[in-house]
Length: 577
Image (cartoon, rainbow, N blue to C red; front, side, top):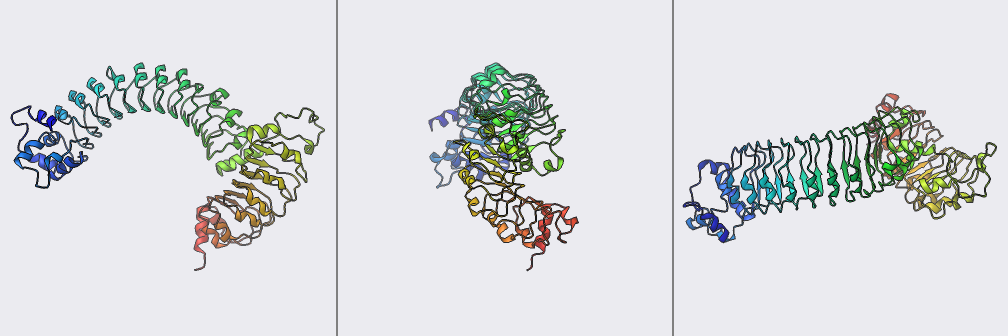
């Protein structure tokens, strides 16, 4: 207790004083007792206009109060009390903090967000153990230079204040890992920021920054950089060397072009929407091997390069509200879960396809891929205008670059062995054997069972599907044309889409279909269904159910027009009880 005795000796009655009535009202004694045991005190949302003295002195008064037996019962041993390490006084009406803050030197967390503070006391420099300081949502116009003395500070949250500059020596906060300066009035970031060598997350969004210092690129641990909603016109080319960067937000600026991300191989999300970017080139994409999210919405892009297919990890691509008139067909082979295209003058994809969602657009693009790649078979004759489609060589380029085995539109009754032989050791995820005269599914397709997820066998003469198709372990998309819904489809649990429109299907088994928990799209348009079993309404995983063009009488057209959810609800209501 030597430290507490030293502080208590600062005045004749510093160790003991009578509690003021308003102190007791604002901070119940029970809270103080609990705080002395836990080392944590939460006074948020208590309508406080100032911090009661009993809070600042919570540790200082322990010894004298114990001697006077004021607060301690026989079961409460004063020597077992602990120093306050966490103080939360957020969501109050504080306009100023007292220099008595120095009486809490053990604090590691000080949370005073959502008050009316215009400054911080110079005594804050004495909180040398402080690791987290949250002063967000106040009215700070300046940050005292004493803050730079907090050498152990790891998290500093200053968002939603009125700061126009930062104090000299800010770079001395060498332990800082998380810094939020968003929603202030900053017009510049000092180059000395590069000395914040431990920083992993930096939020500079919603300020008035016109440029960023190249020195930021020296932050070798920085993973998350948010510069949304500023006035940035360029990004320093040095950013290309930020090897640890994982998330980069540059939305709502004035960028006209992107830098090359030469060393940003860990970058997972790049958000550059709402800028003025006119061109996206191969040099912007070829190094983004880990990218999962690419946000390019609301720019001035006129095209998307074929090199977009290099982004083999891409899951979300937002291209909405640009000037794009066409898309590379190879885009269809990316593992996208979300593709936004609204607000573009697209001429090559019908609106009805776009409205069906991402997977339908990707399927359409895959169907448009043609044999246009190089071949490794130099001895084979060139394909000329007189060459029959069935004599065209295997598109090896599509296999290697797009993971696509394409032998479509050949009018062949048999897929030649050379097509499967061409795969060799390459990974194939998509197979397109559509628009042929196949009467059965090629048995050698089972050789791709561990990798293939997309099989297009539409517009053939298939009459059945072998049970072996269940061996395709990763199959999620299957395009077929049949007179009956093949039994085997019910036994492929990974299927997400069944497109069987324009056939002669007359019935389906709703009980078995209910077991297909991943099925989201079922297209049964233009078939021979005389009735729709009410139990189909129990297939709650369905997001798109298309039934137009069948001879059934119910559900009526008015119900179908309301969409999938309404149709499923209608069917459930008709299930016999």
